[in-house]
Structures are given as C-alpha cells and as structure tokens.
Image (cartoon, rainbow, N blue to C red):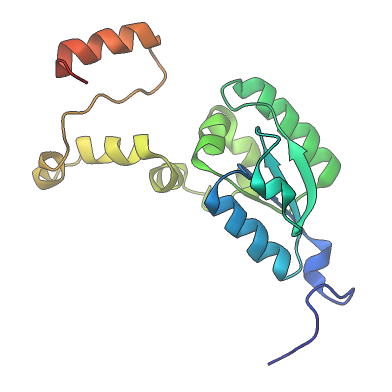
Length: 172
C-alpha cells in the first residue's frame, strides 16, 4: 500500500474542490473529513455559523450561506460561490436539493445522480419517498403508510394545516 502523504503537491485531488452543504449535519461532517483526508480541497458551508463542520481542519474554505427557506437568495449565493471557487462536485443535503429544485438543470453537472432527477429526489427527499409509496401501484406499499398529508409547497401553510385537520383529524 502506498504510504505517501495524501496532501502532497503530487496528489491530483489537491487540484479539485468539493462543496459540502449543511456542514452542521453528521453526514456532512463525515463527508468533509473523508474528502479532506484523501486530499480534496473541501468547501464547507452552512447557514449556521456555529456548524461543527465549519470548524473542521479538513475544510479548506468555510462559508456561511443564506438559509434555504429563501431559495432565490441561496441560489444567488451559490452562483457567486461556484463562479469564484469552481468546485468539481457538490455533496448536497436534502434541504439543499429542495432549494435547487426549481433550477436543478442549472446545477445538475455538479450533482451526482442528477441525470435522473426523479431518482435523485426519491433518494434524498423524505417527501418524494413518501409520495412514491403513496402513489405506488403495489397496494402493499400504500398499506404500510400511516395516515399522511404531504406538503409539496404548493399551498399556504394555514391551508395545509386546515386540510390536515380535515383529512387526518386531531391530534396530529
């Protein structure tokens, strides 16, 4: 086994940057550590300035991004960050993917699995997993779901809550 240091100038990974989102989550921290250990330049970002992943010694660049709830502000920030830092890949979280959904095609070249958006979201999004079960042709999948009301963002929250009470009953 090759025992050369992974951070040497001869390591081709040192030339590649990877953007890891949601640096406060355990999955992102693991990705930051794994990628950094083998020599990639890791760009760690989070809406939480106190995110543990932003403090990792394996993060080459540490950034605080706008919250995903403000999708356009986040996408504008991401566009600027991509133009400046030129990562080869984005390691997204579910929340990041949901914020990118309206313009996924714009970022697909940086996202693993984005060649099939339905599969990508089914893999990352709890909403899409539950939706696929609720609409499955196999009744065994539908039978395993508890009473569920899915929020796809198309209705105001107060309207959705009223529907939940009407459809599911109380307590929720």
